[in-house]
Amino acid sequence: MPNKDIKLVSVPSPNFVPERDLGKPLVLEVSHLGIDFGGLTAVDDFNMAIGATEIAGLIGPNGAGKTTVFNLLTKVYQPTRGTILLNGKDTAGMNTIQVNREGIARTFQNIRLFDSLTVEDNVKIGLHNSMNYHMYHGILRLPKYWKEEKAAHEKAMDLLKIFDMEDMANAKAGSLPYGAQRRLEIVRALATSPKLLLLDEPAAGMNPSETAELMENIEKIRDTFQIAIMLIEHDMNLVMGVCESIAVLNFGKIIAKGTPAEIQNNPQVIEAYLGAKKEED
Amino acid sequence: MKKHTKNSFLNYGIIILFFVIFQTLVSTKHISNSLQGQLIPICVYIVMALSLNLVVGISGELSLGHAGFMSVGAFSGVIVSTALKHSVENGALRLLIAVIVGAIIASVAGVIIGIPVLRLRGDYLAIVTLAFGEIIKNFLNVLYVGVDAKGLHFSLKDEASLGLDIATGTTIVNGPMGAVGITKISTFFSAIILVIVTLFIIQNLVYSRTGRAIKAIRDNRIAAEACGLNVTKYKLVAFVVSAALAGSAGALYALNYSTVVPKKFDFNTSILILVFVVLGGIGNLTGSIIAAALLTVLPELLRAFSDYRMLVYAIVLILVMLITNNEKARILTTEFKYRLKIKKKSIGNKEVSE
Image: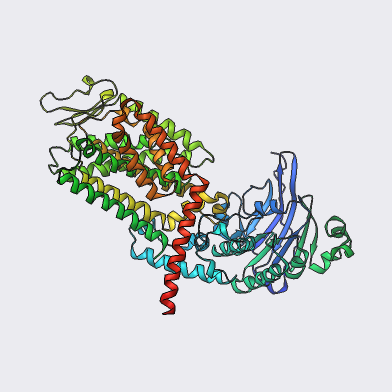
C-alpha cells in the first residue's frame, strides 16, 4: 500500500446546529458519505451535522438522492465512502436493526405498515425491543407477560394520543385512510424511542389542513421527546415553516445549506429546485 | 373479551366437544371400527395442520417438507419408546417421553435447516424443505437401529451389521421395512391432550410479543427491520416451534401402529397437510382443525365409491375452494355477519334505553 505515512486529520466541516443545541453532543455527524450503484454515483460527498433537538430538512428535485441518503443512514444500503457518526458512535458495519437500536427510526416514502395488524399492535412492534419478557413467559402466560403487555398497551395508547388516534387502536392498519397511515408510521417510529427521527415525505397525500396539523405535531414531538428530526418533503410550506436548517440535494450532491430564509434566496437552489419566486406561491 | 381470546376458546371448545362426542360413541360402541381407528390419526393431522399453519399462515413462509419433521419425530419416538420398554413400564409415561424426545430431535432438525435458509429471502425455504423431506425419507430407508442389553446399536448397512445380542436384542428400525415391533401406547385421550397443548402453545405464542413480531415480519420485512426486529430470529422461532410440534405429532402417530414405514412420510403427506392448511384458510387455526379432521375421514367415508374414491376426493377439494373463494358466497357471509352485528347492536341499544 502506498502513502502509508500520510495521516488524515479530521477537519471541522462547514456544519452548523441551532444555538440551543450548542454544547450538546451531535445526534448525527455525516462526513463525505457516498454510494455508487455500479457506475452511477447516487450520493457523493454528503456532509451534515444534526444537533440534539434540531429539525432539519432535506429537499431537492426528484431523483436527487434524498431517500438514498435515508437508506444510507439506516443502513438499508451500505455506504461506499464516508462515515456516519450516531451520537458520536461510528455506524460502520452495523445493519438496519442495530442502527435502529442505536437510535434512528424512520418512516417510508411508500407507506410500510404491518397491514394485517391492528393500529395498537403496529405501535407495539415499535415498543418490541423495550418490552422485556421471553417467549416462554408469553406461551405460559406468566405474570410478567401480563405486566409487560399492560405497560406496552398504556404506552402505545399514550403515543397514539399525539395524533388523536386512540379510538382507532383496534382497527386494522391497512384499512386506515391514507393520512392516518402516515401518522401511524410516525407513531410506530417514535415507539422505538429514537434520538433521531427520519421522516420521508410525511405530508405526501395530505390535504392542507392535515399538513398544517402535521407541522404543529412535528414541533410538538420534538419538544416532548427532545429528539432531532430530519425530514424529506416537497411541500415548501411545511419545510420552510418547520425546519431550522435545510440542505438542498441535486444530482446526489449538496448544493446549499442554511436557514430557510437563506435557502429561499439562494440563486442556485432557485434554479435547481424552487423555480422563480413568483411561481413558488 | 377480545376477538382473538374468543377464537382461542372456540378452538379449545371444538376439540373438547370432538373428544366428548367420540369418546361417548366409542364407549357406547356406536362407532365403526374403521372410524375408531381414524381417531388418533385425525388428532395427529390436526396437530400437523396447526403447526404448519404457524409457518405458512403466521410466518408467511412456504414449507413443503412438514412430513419430514413428522418422520424424524416418529422414528426417534419409536426408538426411545422401544429402548425404554423395560426401564419405564408405564405406557403413558413412556409415550410422554417419546413425544418429548420426538419434539426435541425434530426441532434440532428444524434449527439445522432453518439457520441457513431463513437468512435468505424469497421461496428458498420451500425448495429446501422439499429436499429435506426426501433426504430424511431416504436416510430412514437405510437406517438400522437395534437395542440389546448393551444399549442402542446403529447401522447404515444392514440388519446383520448391528451385531445385536441374540438373546436380548430386538431390531427397532429395519431399513425400508421401517420401525417394527412397536408397542401401541398412543391413546385417543393422549392425542387430544397433544392437540390441546399444541393449540395452547400456538395461540399463546401468536398473541404475545414473539407472535406479533412474526406477523409483522410477514407483513413487511423492511419495516420490521427498521423497527429493530431481528427478522431471522423470529422466522427461525416460528419454524422450529412448528418442527417441534410436528415431531411430537409424529411420535404419537408412530406409537399408534405396530409398524411404520419411512415411505409413509413422503412428499404426498407434506402436500396433504398443506392442503389442510390452505383449505382451512391460511392463518386460520379453526379452519385448520376442521379441514384436517374432515379430510382425514373423508377417504374413509368415500369407501363406498371404491375405485372413484380419489376422484370424488379431488372434486370435493375443488368444490370447497370454489365455494370459499366465491365472490357471491363471500358477500352472503359478510352480509350475514353484518346483520348479526346490527341485531346485537339494536339489542344493546334497547338495554341502554331501558
